[in-house]
Image (tube, rainbow, N blue to C red; front, side):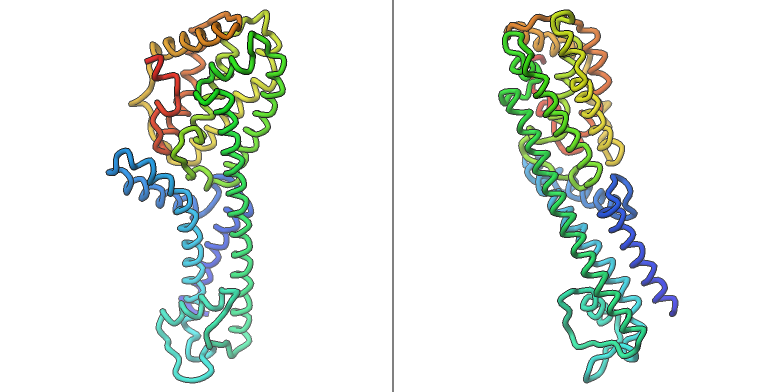
Length: 356
């Protein structure tokens, strides 16, 4: 085996290891090449969309599917080039067609490599030694296995995307389509009765935990962006974090002691932050310091929320200072993730238009 063939074996090993770590090991940030490639494609799409102004949002909606296609092509090309490097020195000797001359250029090696990796096959090139027969057999097994794994992976990704969208839609409907956590809390406790809210919190927690783990297992989900902000991870996380913060800092602590101290409420807060932290840690999020909200806006937003709850017949014990302190801890995460995917804060914080 010469240097070219050793290089080909090494290249195939690297790409197979990347497929293994991305598809089978399935943890955010563990891929060898795929995370870098995905970020490169995402950066190119954002750069292309940037001059289009308001139409930029529509262009970014294609990012997820484009990255999926680009990743599959990246793996296919990498494996084909690796196999071609192994096959190239054998052309005309151990590997040749049944009749006629044998081209020995690298393009011909790419053609033979592609055919040997394909489950369909094709071409009239055939191995004529035991070693090259084993090579062709190995390539066909690799091709069939990778195809099966990738197809299964895509099914799981789109299934997880559907579940994420279902959760986002559920949260938006619970706010009455307003995207305001105060409206959601008022609907969960009509006339101050939160008797049925505990089960709803539990349902949301289970769906949110599944969504968090889906982003951990299938990092490609991060790049699926929809035109409607209501489907964004940043907005649904913002609503849940604002909801749990309002419960902790606004409800009358004596009357609603059970609701405030419910394990599901605290778990919702923690899970939403874990989801945002996973995305913030494993993806190139945008620095949010330039557009950070001021404490005076937080106070105005809180005043609007308290008014909504009081109008709904919910007894309140406002603590604006605690609300502002808690919100300053989690809003930067929301802002960074949202801005990375091209959402403005006005699209995430729907109370902003009233409180500003």
